[in-house]
Length: 65
Picture: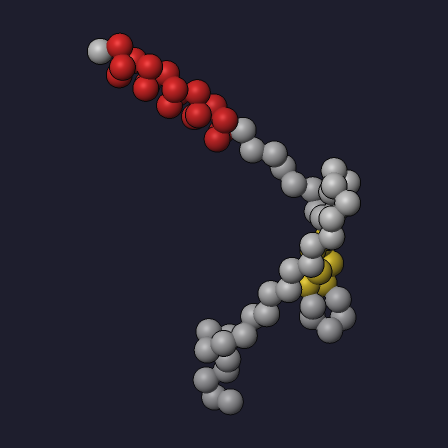
């Protein structure tokens, strides 16, 4: 019984941690050529990350083309 109580209290502590979410501030632009740009600045570490996503494939192709 004591083991179950300790397990329950440990799991209960993790529920509060997962419920706290931080809002991420970002800026979003749509360029004249249709490119969507999303910018997020984080000054906590001197690291640069660039991610590129392409909307290509059979899902995005015109079936008549």
